[in-house]
Length: 108
Length: 124
Image (cartoon, rainbow over all chains, first blue to last red; front, side, top):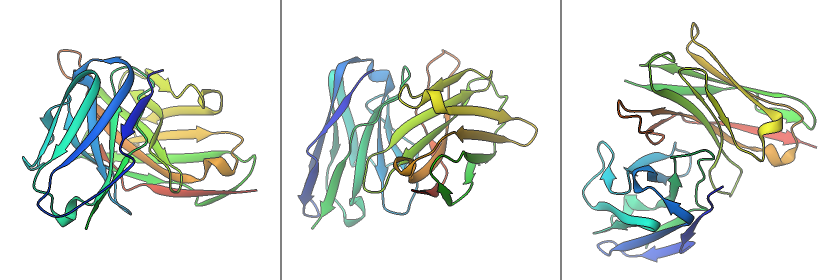
């Protein structure tokens, strides 16, 4: 089973700043099967990125993803107040489709 | 437009059986490549994938929960049903169902459309 670890656990930044969120897998993952989700309280999780670097439908280009092997990154440039949420990475290639423990992003 | 909606009991007692239903619309559970998964989130904790069923009835389960889980689908009713036996307070969570699609090249996709979730509380 692939274990996915995210860092940092929490992040507090100001509007307009850049956020860099890290996701590390316990073994190499095909980047085709690495995704990122945004989850706000009381809402359904929302797919942000798939295939490591492809934005899902309707996701603004402030969001970008990169990485390969065991290390992946979600970057949010020009932070806006509505970006406040918990962000999860997930590998979804082979079962079990494990999520990381999440990074909580607070916009000051 | 693809939508998914979860339904089920809000309160259970320890050792009872939990049955959750995901009613889908905008796609057929028999469409090649379609999958519907269940993901849960205990209060204050992370998302946890627990089960998945594909259009061809292929099934996947979380190894830690597999012994107590069953996932089935009713294509006539457009429903996916998750059953978990012998629940305990650790099963208290919001349960989500979500859609995924395998493309024509055989590449599985992420969970792209999610339901709003249903909260289940298990008392001791």
